[in-house]
Image (cartoon, rainbow, N blue to C red):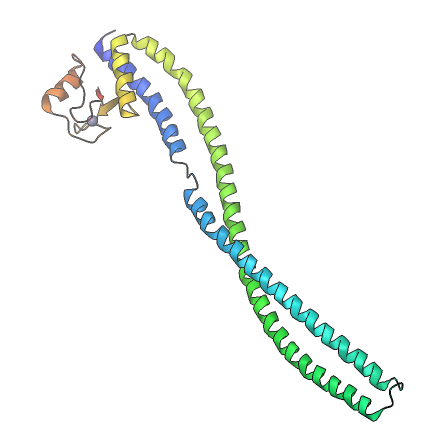
Length: 238
Ligand SMILES: [Zn+2]
């Protein structure tokens, strides 16, 4: 096989490899969800803290409700006693009434306190709920992203798997083992294309650098194997 034919064969191989590499790059570029994961790490403990605060306030409200209920119960039992007709001593009746009055004042204070508790609890509950919704949203977005990535990666891997068998006949056709080895080594070293085309305006399509005169002739004549002085890739006619 002439060098000209080898160049052509390498061009066909390059075309397949470019397609494979593009898919590998797409896999590597898939968003790993780092941003979402880090905002989850910040938001989750914040939401947990707000929930704990809301729980403490809700418990305090419950205590206030119980205290109020207990005073109301005392008022009721004292009133029942007062109006039962069983107590007749004026002094005792007076004491009962005084007790009811004192409990009434206590009740008013507890009612005011309960209102303050209820407001605080409602505000804390609202803050905790909104933080929890935020966390759930982040978690959902992360799961969706991971699912999408898994699906996309599987698609791309399947495409690569379908492209790879196309290399073998091309490699066999080129025949020149040393050339293939050189191409593969550059590919490995560069982590991508082992060859590049020289465009009509004499630039290397891989690195974009202008090819010097001697190399231009080597590429177009096809008498010696030319490589780009800048990126070391095998240069093929455009
Ligand atoms: Zn180059």
